[in-house]
Image (tube, rainbow over all chains, first blue to last red; front, top):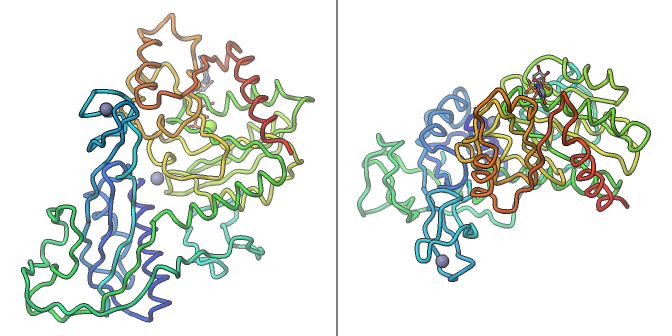
Length: 113
Length: 295
Ligand SMILES: Nc1nc2c(ncn2[C@@H]2O[C@H](COP(=O)(O)OP(=O)(O)OP(=O)(O)O)[C@@H](O)[C@H]2O)c(=O)[nH]1
Ligand SMILES: [Mg+2]
Ligand SMILES: [Zn+2]
Ligand SMILES: [Zn+2]
């Protein structure tokens, strides 16, 4: 399952940070997930609970910061919010629009002890 | 976890050995985006704190407001800014693989599809057709067994099997390790058969020149829009098992139209790994890419 390895990636970033910053417990983690990242936020939160058992992030609150998909139209030059990569331009109907946002998966910040 | 590079690939095996059972000199030093990090304390006084019991409540809107997320009365922790892409590590390994391929003139393809579309059969046929013309090596990815690598070796080409255990895709780190074990001449063709899965491999760059998605006609013409990420990421779609078309109601034009809706630039070749139809076009496509990759 895809979200599982993404969750493992998040845990790895946390463990790297713990080594750098010398914290022993993570209370909250904020993760930015783009609408077009191919990752399901609910599933990721579920997997995160599973992979962090017994780790410094066990029981941490997993806060997902959603980022909308954003595209720019080649025809009219305007930007549209995208639900999917193949959505048409909301202004003129042209396809495809160039994806310019919403593919990110980033660990933003941690609250630690 | 690997002590050399900190990778946590517990179940991954290459030719039966755990990923880090051996001592290897890591070309890939870890890239910590140190430039972006800093530590600071937030004062969490006042404001509209909401209850932390809603750990999975996704109603934050798009604004990023960590300071507002504190349970009243709960001891406040220190805030650590991370700002790192979750796939940054994979992408760094992928970059190293790509540089290595480029240095050696290797044309690498990442073959992705759902299970059973005909990847291994197609690879075997491709190797046979290229025999004496172009050296080919294969990295095989499956959750279990080394059957596919054995099928490849039976053609005479070198192959390395990666078993991902529970993992559902190859990542760039595994591929870098496997590549190091392959006897590969410069200017050769490297085919990476990903784990059969139309979802996850789309997100993981392995350092390949192109992803090639194989859609077999028994899967239904709607797959490109049901699994758009994979078709959006691919340079070429091989429509395989075309020998079966007379027995199916698969609409080839609709399948191609769906693929182009997701990826207007995707190239399409119709193949049958069993009858050999379309193989010439496929081989010509490879030759063109390989010529561009050559040193
Ligand atoms: N009729 C027909 N059958 C094919 C064709 N290509 C592959 N097959 C059959 O499809 C089945 C699966 O083929 P594989 O090559 O093992 O498929 P794969 O994509 O490597 O499968 P996994 O590695 O398990 O995901 C085998 O029984 C093949 O003989 C084709 O072009 N036509
Ligand atoms: Mg196979
Ligand atoms: Zn996956
Ligand atoms: Zn437009």
